[in-house]
Amino acid sequence: MTPECWQKIRNVLCDAVELAPEQRSAFLDSAFSVDPSLRAEVESLLLSFSKLSSSFLESPPVPTTLMPGTKLGSYNIVRLLGAGGMGEVYRAHDSKLGRDVALKVLTRQTASDSDRLRRFQREARAVAALNHPHIVTIYSVEETRGMHFLAMELVEGVPLSHLIPEEGLPLEELLEISVSIAQALTAAHHKGIVHRDLKPANIMVDQGGRVKILDFGLAKVSGLSQEWIDDPASPGKLRSSDIRLESQTQTGAVMGTLPYMSPEQVQGQAVGPRSDLFSFGAVLYEMTTGRRPFSGESATGYISSILRCRPRPVTELRADVPLGLQKILDNCLAKDERGRYASAHDLLRAVEDLRNEFTLGRISVAASGVVEDSVAVLPFINMSADPENEFLADGITEEIINALAPIERLRVAARSSAFSFKGKRVDLRIIGEWLNVRSVLTGSVRKSGTRLRITARLQNVGDGYQLWSERYDRNVKDIFAIQDEIARSIVDRLKVTLEGQRLEPLVKTPTKNLEAYQLYLKGRALLSKRGSAIPRALECFKQAVDLDTEYGLAWAGLDVVTI
Image 1 (cartoon, rainbow, N blue to C red):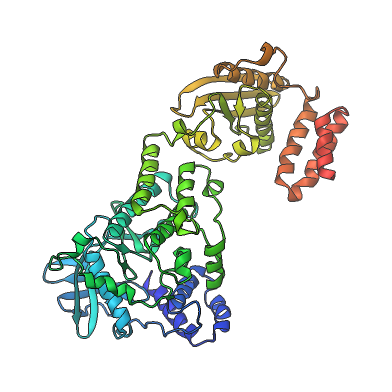
Image 2 (cartoon, rainbow, N blue to C red):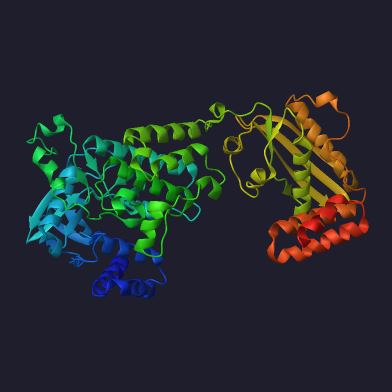
């Protein structure tokens, strides 16, 4: 978060606290009409100082911004990096060791609060106890001139929240990041540490693509292994007395960042490691789709969404998402923590398996129960100069699907499923897994005057091997014969035996009037667009019927439009 954004949040937060609870929503609507994301941060801060059972709010911490050049012990402040509910983070230069570090400085208001000060000290001990490549390294915790601060590793990079595009991250990148986060959580949970505030803003990605989890300010320390407690004198160890810090925390207090909090968190219940797994799922969902899994116009709306709503499956929002990723999300985002992975280690294994399958080009196809003789006919691409011929390419695709569908020993992906990939460049392995098929037919159509060129290619989705390809240069009047040839070639290459060795055409000729056929296809394409395109579709069907009064499909099109 930039200093400018934090300054605005601070000003609005201070004003919001002075208002009655019922006045805050309208005030925040006005203050953040341009940037709703800042509103969510303010609501999260407001919520973190409250209990769900009470409308009482403490005064928010007021940052004490340090100017560049300010000295804190051996550290010289360089610039402000960001700010949160407990304090501010600065880039500083360590004059003793000659290196740049990050300083997390508590606000004076926070430092004067014994509970918040203990939480800050707990962060220092918690992070110091973790020696992991994906968790920020702590150097020291100090106090000077009445200011408490934490010196830690400076991560040269950007928050994950700034890296996620609107359409989501590429699969390879999001899987690598997910593995790193899961590894860090596994290490933290093994030491009895629950992060409780996992979100994209607390995950840094450096210039080399390495991931670091930051900000254990809300970390819960409990359930430590005995061998970790036994040696309190060793650096980075926690005493058994530290375990009791959390037991002294008030029950019912809501801590965390609202859009990423687990159901048990938003209800003020005790949280365990599986709460982090829910937050991981929320982060993974956002990395995949570019949007958060839960939404709301207010804190109450967010809470209701987290408690009651099931996020829209990512496989519906993005065509190249493997089913394995959706299964991981379903597990992590289970409302009841008992429905989630038993541990971060189990989550890590699931994410690593999916990453490895993707890297090796398998994506579970071999183990997904794919039907042996199965095919998906993807929408043919219009290569004509006239974009209006798009309807012709779609029509040819549909005719081939319709010709193959009745064949008893051949499983054909439904038209709606196949067309969900239209206009998208997706790895064939992903398509194979999503549509549960072993082969995919792709092609293109080019029409120029009365000439028609159709190319078609059949590929095995497991290895990308080309099973068959052909190019047809014919007169447009031969369109039905071409479609039939393509369908028969697919059947032959897949070694499917036609029932009774049928010799009749697989593609039936619906009309002898080619112009009527093209008008029908155009009407179908317009009808699928709905809205203002429906009158044009009706006109196409009427013209087709005028040209061939016995054209049943065109009559059916008229019936659909007029019903």
